[in-house]
Image (cartoon, rainbow, N blue to C red; front, top):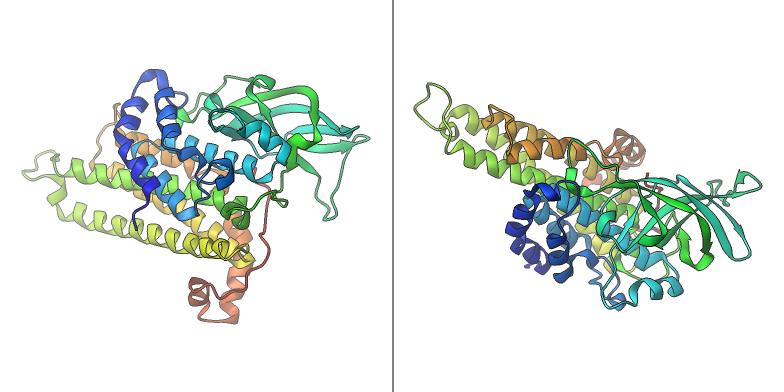
Length: 405
């Protein structure tokens, strides 16, 4: 079945590549591309229908983000992050605050950070708080931004029933925050992930939401899936797009270039053919596994319940594995045909972007270590565990949520 959102993204690839190459767009997404993505409705794939979104499943989201990443990874990363943040605002904020944010002539774009680096106290129906937040991806073109705040009382963190500190997010208007303007990085340069400061101020309680995402205020596929699953989907899609573009560039350049003293192009050499086939198979395997695991999560959401604890760990496992597989693919693609680091170089850009993306916390080694006990136990109990998971026979439970830093 054709994915209309991926098709819209595919139609923008030429524009995205052209705009990304302009020096003035070297730190954040091109305003021209922002407007094009707005016109195609791609920022709001995960937003509930009643608020103007598409309430899409993760598979259409993955395919759309992958298409954009194959044109420019930074654009895809920024748009993906904006889409998730806007979903969080639309799903977890109060009716009153959603009315403020979504009542304008145009649908809003959100940016959000998840590490709880802000502080707040509560009194008389208001939170008093502020702080400095990092990695405000896509904040340059966002209308609202949220940071996570640990709630304090008498100088000590307020603890929830489960022993974790109470953490609230709060989407504020852009004019209520101050951008640091300090974005200067090696890879994924145009994501515009500026640090920002929330000056200490009063924030009405109905502007805040539970930063652990355990209290969705309206139903949607993303609410059933949980924010962690959606975040993993977006990050995996970016890596797939980068690896896909790298293989394309390697095949294209290999069909034209010759090594020194060679009479034939690189693509006709047995070494290139052998290595390309191995890495192309790895890409196909990672791509297929991502679609399988997230399609099963989508089926759970479609049935109106959350993913099981085991499904969540499978999501984390495949997301991390895909990051490292795609990084290896890009490393291979660059080395297979490149003999210099001179810009402009699509493969050089893929190389640094994949290296940076693969070091994100969402794909860190702890994700595999955290997921290991449950997956190992499933294999210990049943040698057909892989098939049970593929068929979705592990019993669904309430969504498992974790703090994303």
